[in-house]
Image (cartoon, rainbow, N blue to C red):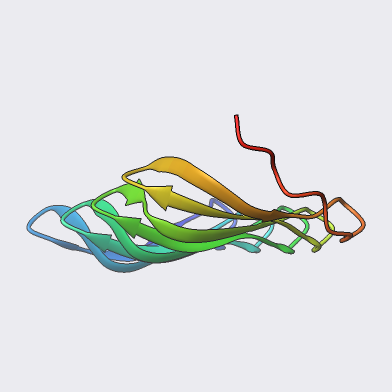
Length: 112
């Protein structure tokens, strides 16, 4: 566990053989949770969630061996859903849906 100088939590997690392992959480200096997720052998692996500085949900998805993989959802700082995308081996392979900052659906992305 690590702390900010004022005594607030900064980082909470465990190590195994010197590598981050298990559930880790990170907080901003104002005490808001910034992100939480699982490490395996020092790399992100499993579900992760991040929040905006506003406290609104920012993104949620999964990592595999340190890279984004599978379905990810992103929200704008006002809390409206912004995008749903699919990732494979760390690269975005498809944007499934998008919304504008008011939460209205955007037209489907055109194929290049």
